[in-house]
Length: 285
Image 1 (cartoon, rainbow, N blue to C red):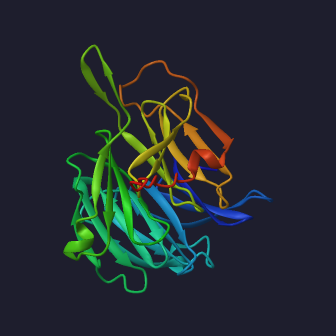
Image 2 (image 1 turned 45 degrees about the vertical axis):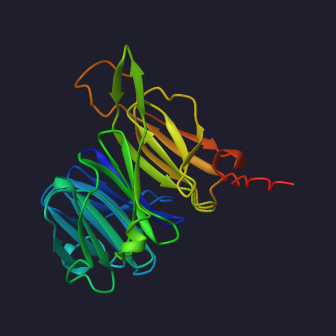
């Protein structure tokens, strides 16, 4: 079905989805009959794919330094399905959608923010506030900003509003680290997934841990037991009752023996993801 590694996938609806592959091809998959259509191609590995329900388009990002938008109603012919090609400053590493807003993270720590209704140029061009290579970007479910993770065990919480008051609310924090023999060992943060109900979020790192965070109160809510290998990807179900965890060695320490790749689907307990109310001080009598 795929002539190379599948680097990303997403749902279209309950019966079909899309895949991004190292063989440079974007495919549509119909699950119940195992039908596969070719939506189109890039000139290098297709790193990420998202489906926009707002625009009715498939958006792909590639290491060929382009973003492409596709009409999924056409198939098996790039000429019929390609809506537009949008050059990026570097290879595309991650992208995320909320409503009509699209955030694209590339190599070189570039961030481009688009309005899908006008893709002629980015609404905003930014540089990552983190010093090291970007691994993942995910938009807040409420549409006000995005979370960004890096290879150096940090996550940045950013806001779209460029006013001084709004920008004062952004911050970054350290995570997926451990201290060993007086040395700090820092792990890449490969994955971020927001809970669709509570707006809290999970991060997955090369340390094999999944942590759940309350971004508003700047607190860690939960840490799941360690998985067999690096966390490569995370995704909550639509109602937030399940969390899919991809445990897969990401070669951060080179070629070495490692546990087999596996996907774990776990039930999510409300206590793990629901923000805790802030305690208010008791007024003096």
